[in-house]
Image (cartoon, rainbow, N blue to C red; front, side):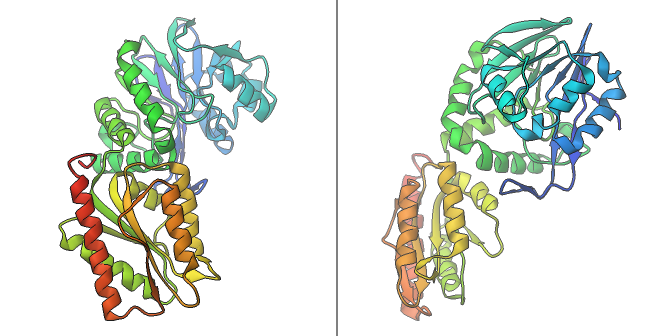
Length: 400
């Protein structure tokens, strides 16, 4: 397997995970990459490693450029296992002079693997490593406590670890080789499911950006394509998503047992679209939680529906609400709805969960016993219209 040259002194030596379909609950329908980078000036530096099962692929790519034992230094920007999983074995094999990481990374890598003799770097610290000039940027909680960026001054490359990345397995390594709609779709999905809880920190980073005074020609993340032609787009997308900018779109997310809640969902969606607002219907028997999160990122509204099972929300609905709560979305309105047989407590629970995640409820929860009658379905249409009207009234504020 061959390394791919990305600048005068830098090669991509990562691995492609074509078969990955789940990343801790996030569906990765297009697989992923684990990007590692080999920097060669007077001496060689390895920036990040790969998930442990892919170490052989990385070492093969390194060997196509240089004997691995000639690597003098390693930089670990992020201690998550998909980027540090083989780090202990790599250290043992190449015996580098030093391994650099953040002070928090030093602790994390010790706690993970028992690694010691690591060198901690500070925010804005500049280090020359065998003719290569690096600047380190502290980015805690983007998206782990120990995360840092490293910037290679001579080549203008920002190694941004998980930030500005995406889960996308592709032999087309660069942004200008991938269809623009795929780039935006997968970047949006990655942001929604990984970065959203830290949006305030993204905004802080973007405010800090000009003061860093870095001449960034290439952004090289740890997942997905390398941004060499259009670094502006990914930065603009991050700003938009971090601000919580929403569109005139409402999700209708539900599961159903005997199609009663589904009938309600379809009529609510019809009411939404009758007011000129886009409705995205997402039955949970056919939609994964991470797809719901992706659509919710820029949706201005979301209607959640559940049947009641043993006095509780339906399990798939409870699952998606738990997942969404952790992502801390902002600027959403909506309504809860559902059908029940013995008691409607599960629908009440859903409404409470929507409140807990900060959603503004347009109407009280709509509960229908057993199969909805014509008047119930008419009420569903009216509820949908209410959501759409409320969303349009807000469109002068956060909606794009």
